[in-house]
Image 1: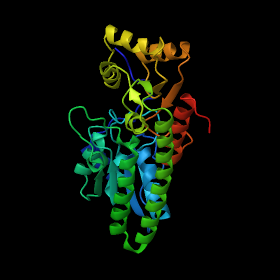
Image 2: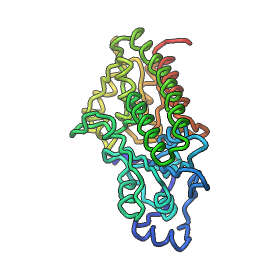
Image 3: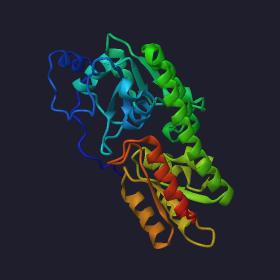
Image 4: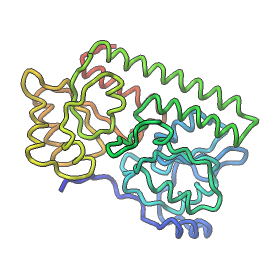
Length: 311
């Protein structure tokens, strides 16, 4: 059985109990989020992960107090259990951002359990992408979706805080201009490396690589098994390892660095042995990074370098 080794998750607390404990001021032993209850005269925003927290901070600026429930590379949104601190933050928030699509179900449970309902932005629904059976829920790698999120946040924050509406709109415009810069860099990759083949360990970055015109050559059964925390069938593993050999070997391996198993280690070693560059991608902000554009821009830089570009 493969595994997803991360640091020990915060103590599991049922949502209803979390609300009761929050009212009694008990912390449950969990590490505090970067922000807690909103400061006076600011709009409280809760994000399910620090990726969305970074976008909220970019749009809200000094007028908002943003709490990211998951703010560590070691926590898994799929498995996270809410805490009293989370419940208190949601109860005080005007806006909540969740990924949706089954990625962060804990966020919806927190909203359902609180008496004061924040405006909820479900980014998967907002994306307009096909959310059918094969839906890739990692919509934070879709730059067009992040532009929609910026506009929606601007509108919702303006409704909650009309005196600062102009600032929210200006911040959204500035954020989308930075996204345009990322789009231009992806278009450069698409022009210079049309149809270049890549391998992945999980579907995490596929919205980004598809926009760059790259072709995922990985057997779907492999990436699906890894995403579900399972061992891929032996034949599928061998098909994946074969991508790194021969004249048609892939140009790069995109590895989810927050998930490790015997199979992903074997694939990474095969890529390295064959001289195929490995690009590390993540589902939450890396340590020391607080900005969405900086994070995605860094991954685009890695990909560009892997494909042989030099900026």
